[in-house]
Length: 161
Image 1 (cartoon, rainbow, N blue to C red):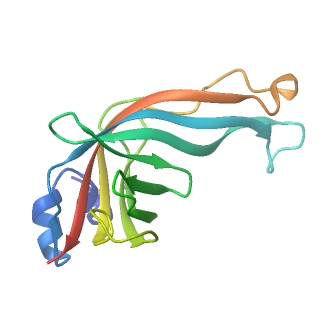
Image 2: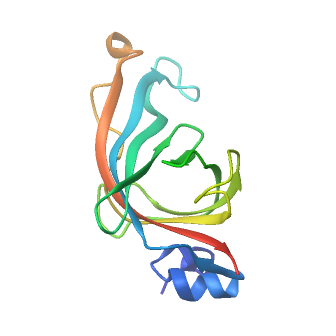
């Protein structure tokens, strides 16, 4: 049984959106891109190094396969029409498959011009594959080195009813 705090994240988009007073905006969007990490000194362990998350770099596609926007540092989502949103994590759950970045529910705030993303209030990331930080290769000799790790995910964008 899943924890109540993570229930929204697990593929129950439309039903859970109704309880939040939201609805799905258009069709779902898939994303293909990379998660960017950088080898850095650990703050909690003297002499240690770790892969630190830097930013996503990905394209967004409609259910029909058309590129409709991009996703990048912030985290921001930007539509081809110029509208942009900034997301903050509301809920998080482990991915359904091993070695995949977590599923997320994010609150969204419009930070760009009026357009297809400007009314979005929440973003749900599910069905993730890949994207986790490398397990090895980060050392003093590699400090500052980036790693671009491929991943895919499905996104649901929600607006107020």
